[in-house]
Image (tube, rainbow, N blue to C red):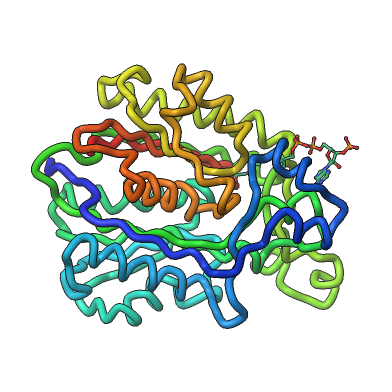
Amino acid sequence: MKKVGIIGIGEYLPKKVLTNADLERMVDTSDEWITTRTGIKERRLVAKDEATSDLAIKASEKALKDAKLKPEDLDLIIVATITPDMQFPSVACLLQSALKAKNAVSFDIAAACAGFIYALVTAQQFIAGGSYRNALVVGSEVLSSITDWQDRNTCVLFGDGAAAAVVSQVQSGGILASHLGVDGSFEELLKIPAGGSRMPASQKTVEQRMHYIKMRGNELFKHAVNLMVEAAELALQKASLNSSDVDLLVPHQANIRIIQAVAKRLRLRMDQVYLNIQRYGNMSSASAATALCDALTEGRIKKGDIVVLDAFGAGLVWGACVIKW
Ligand code: UT7
């Protein structure tokens, strides 16, 4: 099998900043509660005319530039998102057209907050098997479009953003191992009840606010910690490594207390963990992706480092990926 790794990365965060102080004026909450319970200080929101594909395009252009590739060099585009511009066509099709990536096939993956890792591992298979040479893997979300801005339990948590990675064959290092998991029996813990074939949109579903995220946060919390620890350990095991080999953990950014608990269980110090939750909140598939991009930009990852991407989300789905840089 060929070695596969990330050869370029880029991100785009919308300009508008929503602070905890802004949220204090919208719902019954406080900066103190949000900061201590989640670690979030602010998040980004799209402009009125911005959708998920717009964020994906800007992040992808940067990733292609970083990889020194042209859009026509791409054979495959995978977008991880739970907030597509519309039910169909996929964001990946809109992105393929906008980039003029005329040689690429493209599709979306819906694996919620683990979406970027699912997409990365999928792209890896196509390249390792020799079907394709260059893939673009994107995590892009406009969670503000599915957030109930009257529900303090959820509206303080989410933000909008995107990151993209160009994935190709590499001479050394690259993706060493991964572990993906699903348990669909927990669908009730985090979902949008209406708007699909089970409960199509109607006046009633709109009135009952059924098109927004419904989350049982407390119950999710403990699953998040257990499953992120398990995913990281199993992926490391497959790479014949253990947590003492890890230079940087790049986790999904749902809650700083979840991340701290995962780090503790993996026996990692917090300076071995990358955080951008304070700036961006939870951006689902874009969280681990932007965290990886930010960590690279800030020089937190050096050649030869062992980096673990680790995420968990609605499904339940989870996944971890061990990358040697
Ligand atoms: O992206 C992947 C999926 N998502 C997750 O993994 C999220 C996992 N869950 C969490 O991060 C946390 O459970 C939350 C941040 C969502 C909530 O934190 P918590 O410490 O579990 O709080 P809680 O839900 O147990 O609520 C504690 C109290 C409640 O009041 P009472 O019943 O004790 O009087 C809530 O009503 O905090 C109240 N509360 C708030 N107070 C001020 C809930 N939201 C807020 C708020 N501001 N925004």
